[in-house]
Amino acid sequence: SVITVLKEVAQKFGYAVIAFCLMPDHLHLLVQAKEGCHSLEQFIGAFKSVTTSLYWRQGGEGKLWQRGFYEHIVRQEEDLATISDYIMNNPVRAGLVEEPEQYPWLGQWDEPIM
Image 1 (cartoon, rainbow, N blue to C red):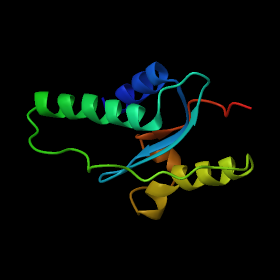
Image 2 (cartoon, one colour):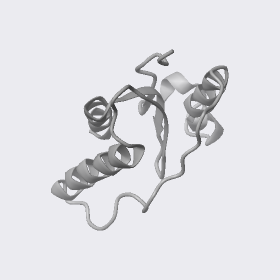
Image 3 (tube, rainbow, N blue to C red):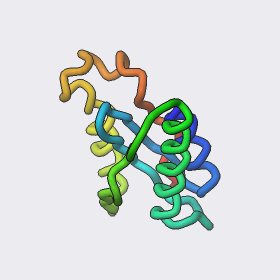
Image 4 (tube, helix red, strand yellow):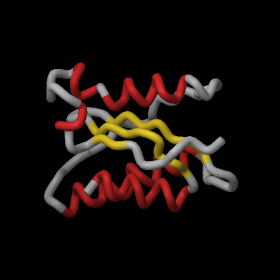
């Protein structure tokens, strides 16, 4: 699954996944680079490549992801909770569920590295 690939690629490329939400047409990620990690571009590129290959093997055609991605650097630790809450509540704001816990494609795996 896309979520399994996310976890595996994040670990391989040296990123802590603080929060994620896979929406029908986009993905929100809050990640933190660990010491000695690969570049964010390499991490996201590998994630897109592996998930696209899985998509094609299951009969999908064409592009799965748009070119590039939007990134925002979090500069203050207290902003992490606000951003994480925003990500976790995305399916509620989109009207997909009434409570975040009802949405199966979101989660929080890692604690921020201090």
